[in-house]
Length: 181
Image (cartoon, rainbow, N blue to C red; front, top):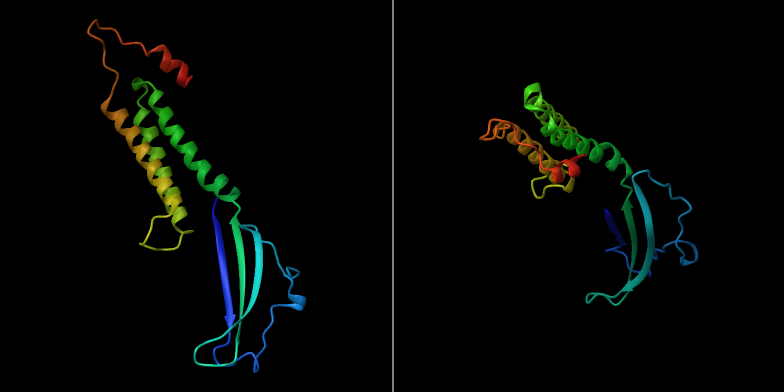
């Protein structure tokens, strides 16, 4: 799961503790009374810390407040609207391999699945921040599925059902029939 830790630090660099005494709330306890829950993120923990720091330049302490929040992404939206369509399109492309060659629709099912996958990837790219430093995990997932769909199209093109040397078509092994059906 996607879990993030956010640390915020507040301190004054110009006023010492005698001039500016900042505090972290009433009686030093964590207060989430003004917290508004979010549909995408869940607050796991919230801590705060108040310290007096001494620096080599000055005799007076400087107050430092540190707030730490742990957040976890709620994955239901991504699973239902981004992952499931990709999985279903990939399965349709792979099941297209079971369509008989005589129907003429074997390759068109694969190409339609590939186009649908690329359209979904374009939609997802609008949600992601533009960066060249790393490929997001959802982008890798779609790239792998696009490769699988492309592979199924290649298999449909390059492996037609060849007749056996006796002239009849070979039977699918029963283990493969049981696995698929």
